[in-house]
Length: 166
Image (tube, rainbow, N blue to C red; front, side, top):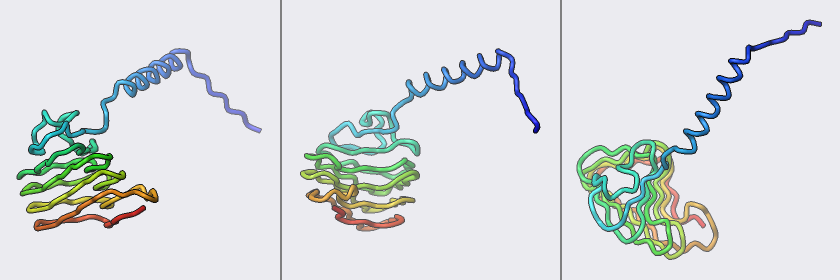
């Protein structure tokens, strides 16, 4: 039988503890992974109307409240997009010449009872590498949301389209 014994000087242990402390401190101070529309109507590229600056490929974009957000000309890469998921929401996102590209997760429109979400593609593009949910993505029975997906022009791409689950 062969026995292998590893011994490390005490300084390796100290470095390991220091690194673990630094990582846990960084995780505690990390920024949120979401940018929430602050309310009212306006253009997507108005950074001051988002809670965490303009959404990017690492951030989930959430649009709540009573508002219309217009996506003007330009390319906008975001993590995923949620529109009107909360009760009492009357949220609408209109793509009119811009290109929304969802890199990490789904487009979700409408979710909870009493809320309304609407996505309108007039001109431009909405490309989602994951699923597109129009109404009750959680599949909870009894959800009575109003979700609208309207494609009037442009390019729409999604892996699957699921409507009214629940």
